Length: 197
Length: 197
DNA sequence: CATCAAAACGGATGCTGCCTCCGTATGCAT
DNA sequence: ATGCATACGGAGGCAGCATCCGTTTTGATG
Image (tube, rainbow over all chains, first blue to last red; front, side, top):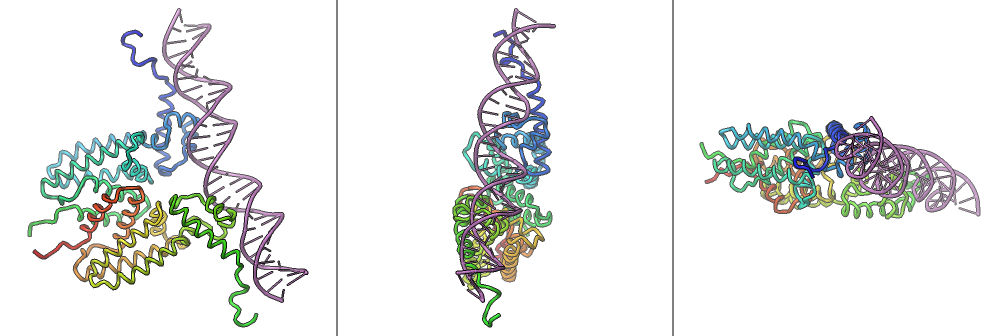
């Protein structure tokens, strides 16, 4: 073993090419047909055989998680903006909307997400991201509670579920107006009633 | 045509037998495996061919609607009890829980339900039941609003969506404790804040 | 540059489930 | 008992999943 050698031989070029093509194609298909889209079709359009797809991504969730990585990064980026806000209540609100949009990235996404959030399946590639989101939500909730803007009984996990629900309903094709009514209802549910006046 | 004859010849015996067997078996399979269960398996276990199943119930939704009929009747029965309550706020609450239980009858039920509720697909056999439920919810909401117990901005449709959401989350295997927290949150969202004290 | 072995490819394959079509069987009326 | 409308049921075509293995590609080595 020569010094400076990093982990065996150099990764093959075709591996990276195929992985990139698969991710790109998968994203398009998830966008157009939802998370239940045909993986065979994805492989074919990416110009690889089914075997190659399954070698790169052993399960649908693995592919989904990889495609979602980009969007996770965007979410983290937004977090920086949100953290800059002075009002913790507004920060929470914005964060919830950002999460909801993330959940709505593809139709049908909330289902595998909930499955991953629930479980102690450490091998589910979506589990970690979910728990990160729940923790983050809890942070925002606590901050808003310290400012007396959110009821003390509320937990981050509750609002994670709420955001997931709204995303799920959105995915079923409900009109935006109904969604707004529901969001308002939920907001009334977690906000501390005004003590003034 | 002799008098007293009703609508052509008497319905065949095997038709009714098969229909009953299919409904019974389907209910068991929906309970055990959710609404996505294999219809072939249902047919086989009911002792009929796939063709027979599809002749009786052309789509999965049709079978689902037929199986759900029993439970719809139970819901109507409960309505009688609920209507007897003096407190309209409590009536609304009970009604929401009854609906939620109905939505949770089988895992995965909320999805086809939402699809039916949204659409102007008059041929979807679940559409009518859904709209009935929405109207009923609106009644309870209005009554509670007249008593000043529910915010004026709330619509029956909103709470229908909320109940459906909770049922959906329940179906993903979330613990009962989390569900209760969410129900509480939603209740805080639609209830008129106490003006007393 | 030629050679080699590891690594990756990809498609044939077996499986399950959906839904339809049509030759056959069944049961009601006469 | 007979006839005919009605219903049956399974074979068959299709699509998608996931795997396995013979073949090809690729980077390393001298």
